Length: 231
Image 1 (tube, rainbow, N blue to C red):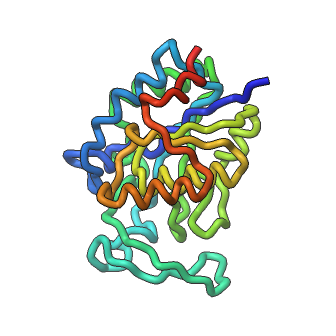
Image 2 (image 1 turned 45 degrees about the vertical axis):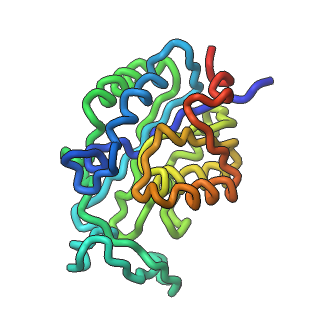
């Protein structure tokens, strides 16, 4: 019996998109239309669809403003469980604050996704991350400390998913960490590289090697593998 496959759309939000996003990733809007095609084309059959959102309070710990420093400064931050563990964090411009324009999906994607959410012809869900003030999240599965788990893994399991196909923003941050955790949770995981965009595209080779090191298969939208998910 064949497996069941979920499409995972990571953080396709206005603050990550040019020209106005506070943390815009270059050429981010180029992937919106082909991602919509994955959702709407009758040639693809997904067994579940998840779209994730960064969903930060206005004083989130990952914001440079919270620490009164310049964006992209790095700082050692302590684990929220008070274990004494520390990690070096990059501090970002304020982005994806709850219920602001920057946290929204782009309209053309949102129109399609809201329709899928309403119809539920296949199980479709929004997974929020980063809403706890005291910890950073890149992965849609858990915070960077591995303490708080979102509902993502359980939702996939509840729907019998075996394989996960990821797209979205950014290839070298939230998509990558989500894919690594997906594989860690036992899902056969793929990333469609040309349907993502990177914050640091000059480091793509290193980023791709990190995916492969963590048992994630990197493919493109022209890969033969996509035929496995077509009707």
